[in-house]
Image 1 (cartoon, rainbow, N blue to C red):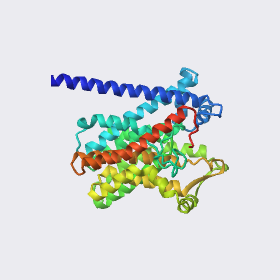
Image 2: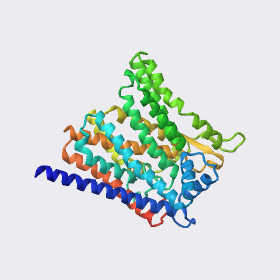
Image 3: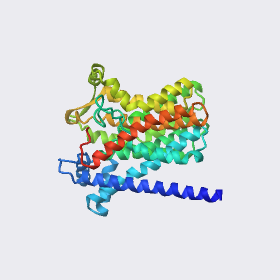
Image 4: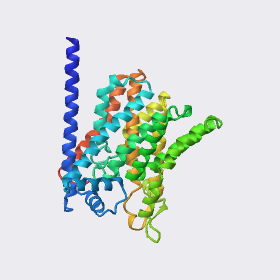
Length: 393
């Protein structure tokens, strides 16, 4: 009887999971199709211009290549919308894989937490700055963590970036004992693809990886340097695509370039609402960070996620583009992905703290309430987008 109940419960959970996958695919496909055919009065997004440059073969991203292939299969906007919706659904599986890797590194039994992981994987798509009426009533505008639904290249970078980071964590845990060639090839290919999708991931990830390679070099006093070089060469071998992209985005004689600025820091320090803005976007990671520091529970992957986020944040604050691309805010994409990864690693740490009985159930539930505030805000934001609202709200 007990076994039968277990089978029935498992069947119901799987059915619910499939239902949510289908719902997310249908809703996101609906949104992306409306964005693709938008006349500019509603459903505003970057998608029309991305489709245009894809068809005319002038885009720099893997997403543009994907759109061109889909357009050959069936030249209709619904095909492109379905492809982008598929990328969104695949991100759920990528997040599940990353969460699984992180929990296993903390010796948490993943099977006992599978339902929770599936829930977090789905809900992560809706991570949004917490909506605070009368104080900080924003979803995406000036937000620190809101996951965008209007930029196709970001959506593909997020999928591939999460996969690349999961493989990195797996290899990094034992790379000083040697790296298998199949892992070397897989990691290099993933980095190349995510670079092809959008360069914001690598400019945050590569400095973080270098910092910890240097740390290991100092700690090991040079022993195992051949493994460090081999590991680091995965990044170097993936950078060739960035050279091509750089020449396309910043051609010789063109007006676009990258410059250092302190303007964003001045704006942040001069605005009284800046602290509320940061807290609304990073409330959950801040709660977990305080808890983790107090408990002195800082797993390796978690520290790396924090460092990567700080690097992307510093890049967004101090780097900008000049010329025609000056107002595009392209360095902000790395910060949003860094926040996304920080949320996921914070979820994993919270699960582990509770699993190891380091925190009470009351604190555990209170922490998830903060996470829930972000997700509920994200669902409200998504519903506005589905009804044609502008994304900068």
